[in-house]
Image (cartoon, rainbow, N blue to C red; front, top):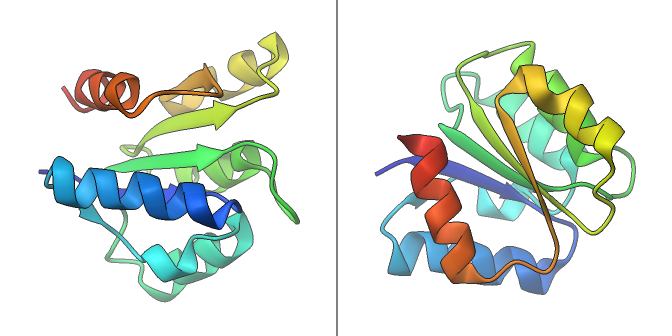
Length: 124
């Protein structure tokens, strides 16, 4: 199973997705308590440089730093990470900007079943 970090400033959604990934799918969800903002997730990753995830799932619009900025920052440290950006603001320019960073962008709302299929595809 994969190491996955979920970053979302909507706490209820963060907990729901994290529990689904760990309990239902058996993945290791990393630094759950540090992932309520892009800035706190980035800080946690900097403090634990040997603990980078295989997959980052992040919301786009968050306070302080967008999910796109988080993806770019992390990609500068480790290029092998895969990314899923979930957003209600899916614009073509966001998709194009993130294309070099192994990122798939999807629009909210997304079902857990759809997310499972997408994760399987990304991690192949």
